[in-house]
Image 1 (tube, rainbow, N blue to C red):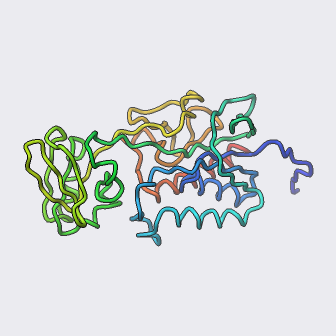
Image 2: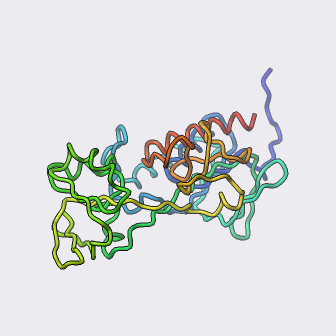
Image 3: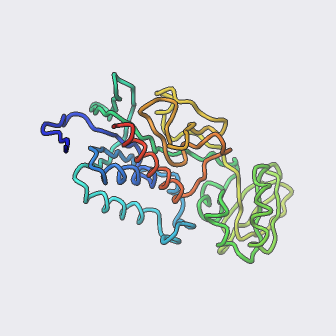
Length: 284
């Protein structure tokens, strides 16, 4: 016998997804495919904002991130149970058997909550790095390494030592630099000139840096979610957090068996699909 809700409560959503990057968009799509009443809230900032193109994504290698998000938005428009709003969430709180989401003076309630708000990268404190980050300065060789092929690259900081082996077959040479010896970086043609404290300088095709991660939004703290040494939210294999009814996807969360999130657009989208499917199971 089919079960239908002839008089749905239009003041409450089955799920609210916070974050409009690939993880949040995929979670909303997964929920929409099985007709769960879903609200996607997109604050308009994304971890890969500095990147002009994304790489290592099957079928989308070299696609600007904004184009992928626009295509995903178009996909979501086909599902009547999914609503997308461009707005900033100010706070979230558990309430009864669900959650309340604050949008300034407005509030919405939901049975389930999927957080896909990402992380912020804290960069080495050297002039020139913020301006070049996401292009000639990068942290992920799978996203940017091939673009430096056949040319010298530099690794800046202790947290980049493992990149020596990864970039060895790609670059013509790999040079490790101590952060304290570097004065500044600047664009030089299609590469980077690294100025050292001793007055010398050297040109590279690109520079890899390690970044410290912090949550881009306060919601994990507001909900008291368990976190990991990486600064990310702890989730299980189904993207479930320590608080029932709250799932987390994308770079903001990872399983404790991983030392850090698998930071890529593709893996973020995959985790969003898992979070969405697991939320359907929770709602049942």
